[in-house]
Amino acid sequence: MQATFALDPDAPPLTQAASLALALLRAAKIRTWAELVVDPAPLAAVSVTPEQMALLNTHAGALTTLRVGPPMVTLAVCPECSRFTIVSGQAATSCPLTLGCTGKPQRASTAARLKAAPTAKDAPVETVDAAGRARSGDPHIHQS
Image 1 (cartoon, rainbow, N blue to C red):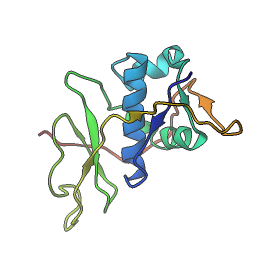
Image 2: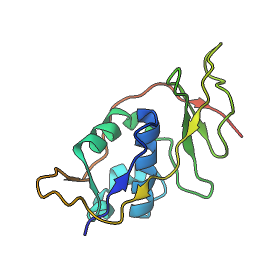
Image 3: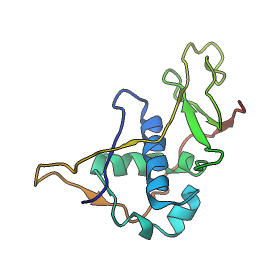
Image 4: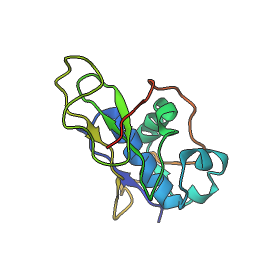
């Protein structure tokens, strides 16, 4: 059975992508996204949906900053202005990224592994074989 992961549908898309990427790094037992891009072979037993693959490809530029710990380096994404910071601790309680923004950044945590694979025989699932190279917004470093 191949591993699959659940994402929070209410989280901003970049938060979902970072959450999935962190789960893939842990599943592959690799520390950084750059290492995974060079050698995706450890993900042979992992499946992602086409929608999840699109998320990874769309936000691949921002995912290059992720690292599994210690310390874990992840992203905190503002749901209001869609900007993000790189964090290794807690996210800020209010948006420090856009003047006047009232959003509260959401810290991406590792996606939960599903206990069972999808039951529908026709459900499309792709094996992860390479990380995308799409660009994302400029990161803003935030130390907590």
